[in-house]
Image (cartoon, rainbow, N blue to C red; front, side):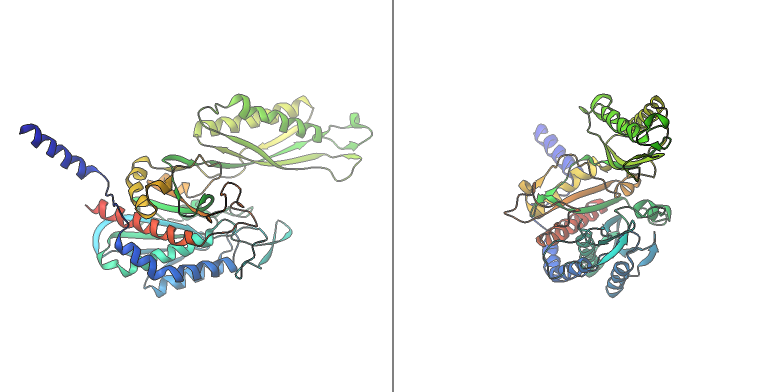
Length: 437
């Protein structure tokens, strides 16, 4: 009898500590998703047809702010240039939660045959190019607007407060400018409203529509840029001994730098990447130039590895240049990079039942570590964060060979809009209700 009482007490105690789990989707989520579905699709198509580059999201920002005002919200605009933020005040006491969507597009010329395909062109880095939502930020913005509309309709019963973050410049500010999540935080995003947690999502081509991918702990890599300039001495191509060849020196730097990951980094623990993306030097076939410039990216998942690779690349560049009689300017990194996107383990475990309630246990999968980066990572450094991927590739198409995010042929299955909205709304309501209790 005593054992039975103790067992019952233990079960009750564990149940009180366990996250709120739902065997099925909340009925209010289903009703809200059905009510707003057509509007979310319309918003997404409008944003897709009128894409804007990072720090240039004027039309998008205005459309978002106008939509929020029609819902009865009072958005704050102009944060980090074109960011829009609004707070939904629930009718019951509870926690504070932030939800984030990014708004910017890419300098990519669309090659998808859609009636709402982008025809926008612009000048980027001195070249004429198309502009396209090739990464799905149009979907993210539309989904968050749909969530805002849904939450406003249930505001009286809502516990706590929800901050809606519509963020510009996730893809990176233009050269010489600041932007994105880091600038929003610098300008006081969390100063007066410090959330207890922050959620974000991303439509993803390598995940089938109907699936959600999420992993605990490190999920996406830290991303850093570098630029290295090799200074030689110009001479005629027929008399290489009359100068110092920066092209040969730069080539040796690229070759030697390959050993940083393959021989100096413990990739058995976590992966890392050092990639040279561009080399520019010289103007004529028979002139050895004065200088060669190289740019590239570094991807890591551990801060210690990150700093060691910075030091190793500087060391390689400096000593290879010296061995060739050249000098070097090694800016490693050359700007503030994105930190690792890290999902708080406790928060992730707590919210998994919410995601599974929407798509089913078998359709919530753990993806491999992603070498791509996300500036959502800045928010997740301030408060516990959860960032998950929503499948974007249609059934019948292999997501491993489908055109990827950033491709001119990236094609979003619009079912992902409904799934993303349901997943984020379910997670939001479950979090607020559980935290309130």
